[in-house]
Length: 206
Image 1: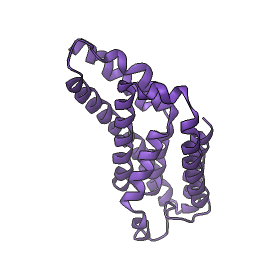
Image 2: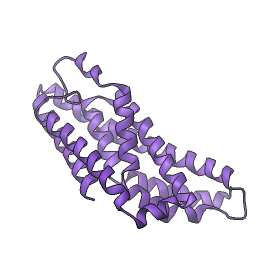
Image 3: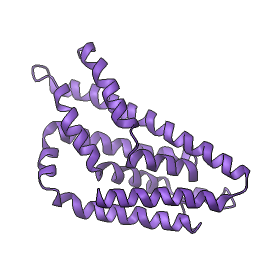
Image 4: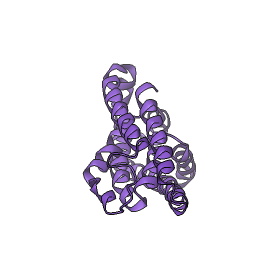
């Protein structure tokens, strides 16, 4: 691919990824409650969802879906309600996402649950669809083979997403360690729960 084009593509999509949104807030929240290593399972699901959204944006499916937002509405409400419920449980220091006194209990959150949560959040994010529909197609050269271009561009997008989520999750881990040092686990759960509730409301009503 044209290196000059990539020199514009990389900073553009890094800025899109690093901008606070549902996926980055979710990464920070799980970084607080579960730590970066466990949050990686959510990140794999989120990256798969982002890659799917980007692929459909290039293929034109996203344009149809954005024209008929009713297809998204039920999915968004269900996903938002689930995240809201998780946030309330965390606020009450209950549920699998909340930080328990025993670190062994924290491992009861399954990798599959985290993976699905990341995938659903990415696919149901209207902001992600809008950005990819608007920004990705102009970087596709119609005079060249589509598949190699998609492989390169999607690889870059997924890598940028991973870097940004690690930044957010790492910040959450640092906050978690700081608050645990002061033995204020309940305050930490309420902070993380508030973030999760915000993500759920954002997903449902954005």
